[in-house]
Length: 362
Image (cartoon, rainbow, N blue to C red; front, side):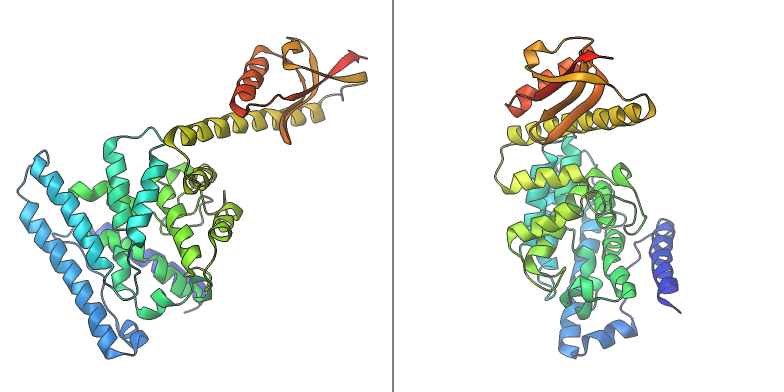
C-alpha cells in the first residue's frame, strides 16, 4: 500500500470508528498493535505505557458509573466534573512521553483568548476541560511518535500522530457532560485552510475552541522542540504561528495570542479585536476601490493635495487615505460611511490619517 492510500486508510479508520462508536453501549478503545509494541523496543517502558493507559481507562469507567444516575442539573455533578478533569489530566501527564504542566498552560492561555469573545460560560468551561485533556489520546501512541520531532515523521506516522485527537474523543465517549469539550479535542488539528485532520473543516466551520487550542498547543510544541526537533525562543515560536496565519491558524486568534503573551489586559485584548475588524473592513474597501478603478476610466487630475480629517467632506474625490503604512481606501468618492470609518479609526489608532484628494478633475 502506498503512502497516499495509507493516509486515506487512516483517515477512514478514525472517521468510521467514531460513526460506529455511537451505536455501542460503551466507548471503543484505542488498541495496542504488534507494530506499536515493536516501536517501543524496551519491554519495561512498554509495560509502563500500558499501565498508564489502563489506569486512565479504569478511572474514566469508574467516573461513568459513579455519575450515570446523577441529574445533569445537580450541583454535585459540576464539582465531580472538574475534580475528574483535573485528576485525569494529572494521570495523563505521568506518561513518560507527555511533559508535565503543558495541558495546564494550554488551558490557561486558551481561556485568556476565549475571554475576548462573546461566548457563554458553558463554552468557556468546554475550552478549559478540552485544554486540560487535550493530550488524552497520546497515551495510546508508541514512544517513537511522542519523542521524535513531528517534521521528521513519515506522512503515515504524521497522520497516526494526529489521530490522537480522535483517540481522545473515543476514550471520553458516553460522558455527555463533556460533549462540548470532546468536540474541541477532536478538531484540535484542523487547519484554517481546510487541510487539517480529521475532517478537513475550513475557517469558522472549525469550532472556536479548537482554533484557539490549536494556536496555543502548537506554540508550546515549537517552544519545546517537538515540532521541529529544536527548542525555540518565544519570539521564534511566535513567528512560526504568524507565518502560518490563514493556512494553519485563525489569523485573529494568532493576533490575540500575541497580545496575551505580552500581558495585555482583557480591555486591551477587546480593543485589539475591534481594531482588527475595522482594519479588515477598511482593507476590503480599499481593495474594492482598486478593482472598481481598474474597471472604469482612470481618474485624472491636475493637482493632488493633502488635507486634514476635519476638511474631508461628502463628494470629495479621494486619491488615497492611509494610516501610517496601512491603506484604508484609494480612488473613490467620499460618502458618509467613509467619513465615519476614518473618524473611528483615527480614535482607535490615536494618530491622524494621511488624506490626499484630487483638487480638480478633468
